[in-house]
Image (cartoon, rainbow, N blue to C red):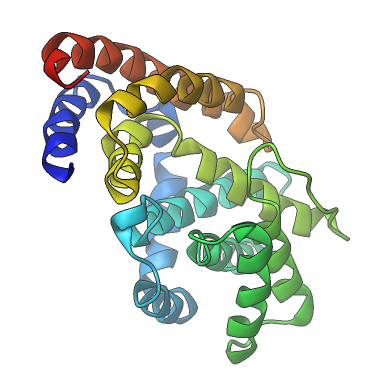
Length: 252
């Protein structure tokens, strides 16, 4: 099964490579670079990344690579949104670390039912070892609790806390674009050992769910750039659907 999906994934990567990177990374290059710098040098994120690496496996499509991408994008969104309202650099720096820690932990219980709720509870225990204020821990845990699509959310007690949730959500849903066909769908299909016939039966419904994400982005920046991620993912998915039918007909 893994060999079959490896062959299909190779075709998917060829398709993905023909599409340009989403505008978010060009238009906000400096914010993305600054977020990456924070992520790679702050002692909190460095320590937490090492911890998460020991807990997450990439065989489910939501492992460390996924968490790191979400963390860097969430940090960039936090920088962008705070600069728009004139927040101080010191405040921004701290909030970037908060949202990046939330991103690192957001899928820590991904293989369990109600993983967002259970992940938030687990994160609360983990973060007791870190020098965060109670309000900061609450913001991180609430963001983890609220990161799933099409699920009810809990209200934050502050606008700053709400922004952590919204930045985490948007960065996580950016992954429903090209990344979905670059990595996620193949690791999940292999993990569950889904027959290709069944995979193709589920494909149209999966595409419909991706399309629905387009209208759920929460930050101003996410609403501006998120739909392009989704449209690109849909275009890749439609092209790949035809390729599978044409070049892997013997498996259907």
